[in-house]
Length: 271
Image 1 (cartoon, rainbow, N blue to C red):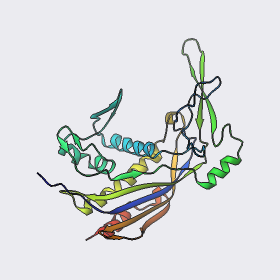
Image 2: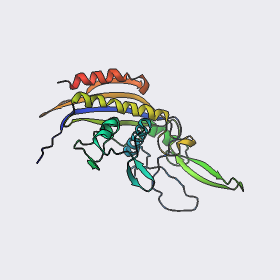
Image 3: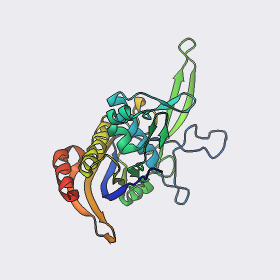
Image 4: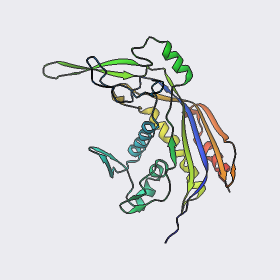
């Protein structure tokens, strides 16, 4: 029986606030059908009724953008009409290492067996206390949100089919968002190689700022910017668990020196 082993050398933390430049719609389940009810409500925390950004939505969007940028083949069917990239062999895994190596893959898929746990975890992102207070004081259509009316126009009869879209208004800030990157090193991988791979996450967030988050981005929704960006790292040794060490911070993502961040992380995890 072949022995498998993986070592956790530490974790890298990326924290930032997510500022909405345009209204944000991340869909939630409608409470029921009613006359005059919303067609597309946003997701809310059932405990306080506040909208939030699910970590799954953020992680899925970042992965999707990386797949598009690198032209990764859509090899795995999630459900009807939805496909994602999952490497099918070792060559594919290495070719798209910045995707599967960061965001994870299936442990067994066709001719590929991977024993490395998923390195990236992204937390749900609540409203900042300042934004929660500001939105609560505004006279919005619903608590913390606005209603945006849209209409599909029949090209022949010009008949309109209106619908109501719930959005968190532009100017709101969610945070702190936290992405936790675990420095797992498996067979055939070096710690330096895994640390360098963290740069792919910073790359993905850069693409997000040029794209959109949530639904209906082609119609103006979901333009975001990262603010108050911080990177920290905690190196782990058996029986030792110290505080996270600050690595870098910047007012915006684009002010962050990516090469310097990776170089500092390499020093922290060296040896």
